[in-house]
Length: 144
Image 1: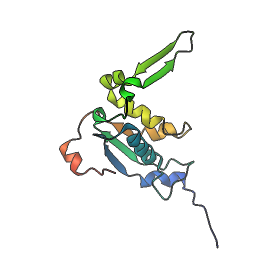
Image 2: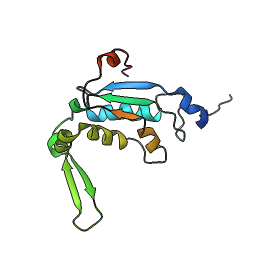
Image 3: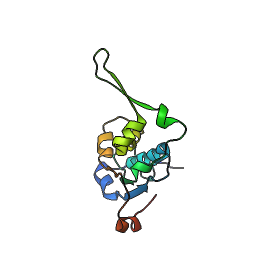
Image 4: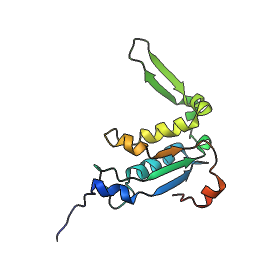
């Protein structure tokens, strides 16, 4: 039996991009980020090739109403370091959600995509909105 592995041509990969709209209202952050990362990478397609950027456009609405399970709102922290002695910064998720909930969703999706040369191109197709989708867009939305 002859078996062949399909390799997507990078020149034709961008022609088959679809648009997906995800509503974050009431959804758990990790599950939403996993779904968005898979759509951005193109893993839901039969033509998926890991070395080619064959993903779709993703738009996430209602980022402010995403859920975190357990006590993550009080216990989870974002960590950064300046490189200098004593330059450690920890920011609780609750404070980041108050300032800009889009950043919480963005960081969750970003950290679920492998850090390689394709990640910046894939994340450029991600749009995150704090509030509700407009009425006309909601009816035409493809909520996957």
